[in-house]
Length: 411
Image (cartoon, rainbow, N blue to C red; front, top):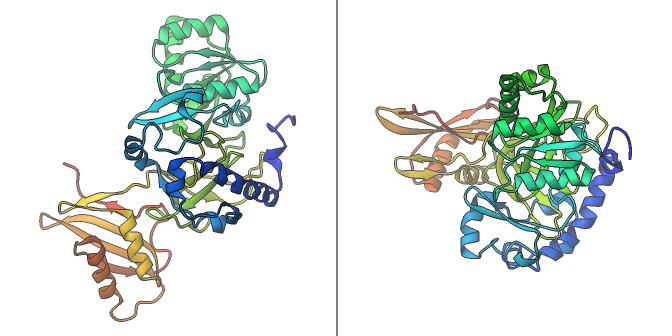
């Protein structure tokens, strides 16, 4: 195993990685189609034809936000599990509630690679402070720790005094959990006079990790990196010592699409993260996470060659209620489809004369007579609400993935 990388997959030529992934994708799709949910979701799809990003982009999106309703209709997992529930390793539950199965792969969530990048190595001790109660986080990171050959202290959440006692006695090398709870533990140790200086590294997820907190933890002797993960696909991308964006994990495919659609955006544009995983037990095909990010240009200085994303940049679900009616990003995307001469769109919602008011800002290279009026008519047809249209030059709107900007005052 190379000293700086988990394995040789991380340093493959990008063209070779793309070839390897799409050579294996048809088999993933064929296996997924054994499950009733995927039979319905991918009806009419020939798995053997999905051998490129362009072909993948034609498949329908499965929205994570829809899983709650789908699982109620077809319990327990909406019919998207290939392996029967009773043959899974664990059956878990996240807030929503959304239910997730744990399959039989040694590192089912792809956490070991992220932990290796954060400095964890075989024979070390990991203090795991993700919750062990029903939710997947702790089990994901425990599986990754075990795959690396590390022993695990199942700290879970809360009980900071008891956890500090365990750290002082068992001397773990590193921490996994949310970043803010690591600070709680360090503060508790300082207050009690306990020695927790064995903690030298950490991998965090599940909460904001501002630069100020990263610096504080580093100043207190713990070098911490972060990863972006969801229960359905595991670690999607992870930080490396280069600290330039997050490197996409191996064994899954990431797309960035325009919110409200399944259409990939140009590299660098902010959009919704869509993930396709290769799990044999619970595959996910074009799962729209609801989170925003953007592809970073170039390669990481750390030597890993996979795509990089900028990390979490907000939520893609920007649905707003205007005059008692919901307006959704999908509707704004439909306006754009009906007027292909338009570029980036943004619906701004404000208050005017104590009433809700909508203005659609639309990038357009030229402004022929009647275009604004035609777009306004389309906006009203699609949303059933009247709104003004302002045509602006290409590049005028911020590249932040925001399709609906609700500027109404709160309260």
